[in-house]
Image 1 (cartoon, rainbow, N blue to C red):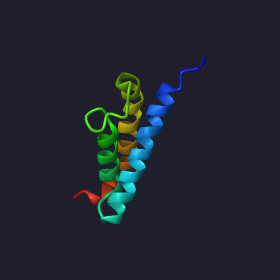
Image 2 (image 1 turned 60 degrees about the horizontal axis):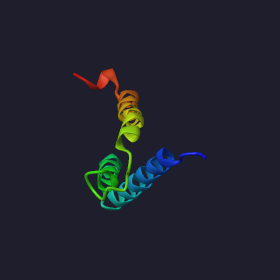
Image 3 (image 1 turned 90 degrees about the vertical axis):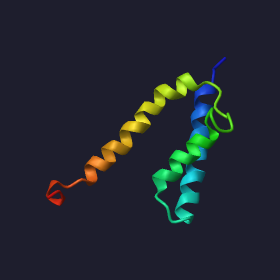
Image 4 (image 1 turned 45 degrees about the vertical axis):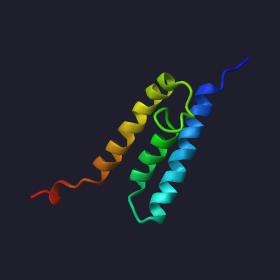
Length: 81
């Protein structure tokens, strides 16, 4: 009746990114690096756990915008000289 393919693919990517973030924190590296590596490992070029890359690619564009937004919140114009 319902197709939960997109939700399962996003879930797999979130779990992979979470494990990558935890592993990078344990190695005292930035968490965002672990998120990227974890997503790449479970993605189509890694283990291939994501079946429909076109659907996930459309949603992942939001994932590229949110880190840029968070970096913009941390940026202070007075720091730049």
